[in-house]
Every structure is written in C-alpha cells, then in structure tokens.
Amino acid sequence: MASSSNPGATGTDAPSISITVERNPPQSRLVELGIKSWPKWGCPPGRFPLKFDAEEMCYLVKGKVTAYIKGSSESVEFGAGDLVIFPKGLSCTWDVSAPVDKYYKFASSSS
Image 1 (cartoon, rainbow, N blue to C red):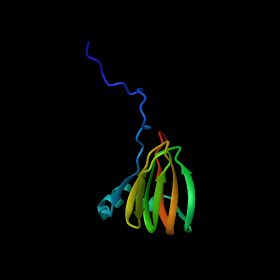
Image 2: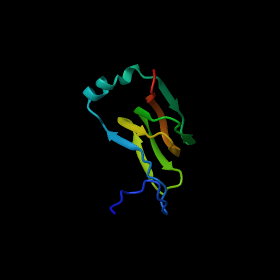
Image 3: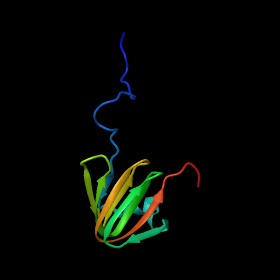
Image 4: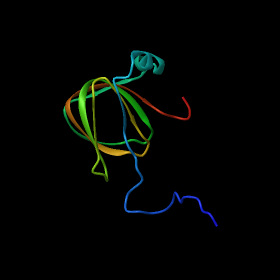
C-alpha cells in the first residue's frame, strides 16, 4: 500500500524553476567549458522580458542584472565574473543596471 510521491500533484506553488549562479568560477573551469568560443551578446541598461526555450549557460564579462522570475517573488542578482544557468521554460524580466556583455551557449540535443 505504499505509494510514491506524485509529481503531478497540484499545490499552491508552481514548480520551482530557478536560476543557478556560480560566482567567480576559476579560470580552469572557464577554459574547460570553452567560454571564449561561445557567441557574445550585450545589452544596454533597461528592463527586458525573456523566455528561455532551451537551457542557457552564460558568463558575464561585464554588467549587473537583477532577474525577476515570472510568477514568483524570487529575484536573482548576477554580474561580471558570474557563470549563470537559466533552465528551459524559465520566464523572467532582466533589470539591467549596468550594460551587459556576455558569452552564452544554449543546451541542445544536437550540434
């Protein structure tokens, strides 16, 4: 009569989707990930709504961002020197307080 947890159970909280921030990773990790071969992207200060249709990993060379996760009171701050992972399906608004310059890479099942 034992039962396993029910992943489809409904509750008052939406499924937890969160942003992962690795503060100032060592240079060896950046080299291992091949960051310098990733495309670059930048934006000026402002507010930008974003939806991640695939997992994104990025490394901020410069900038400062507070990301407000849609449907949550949670916010996450990250900036220059941080390695950040945005999960697939995440919707958030970036409040960019200092211009952003980042390397980024989307996860995919094929290259």
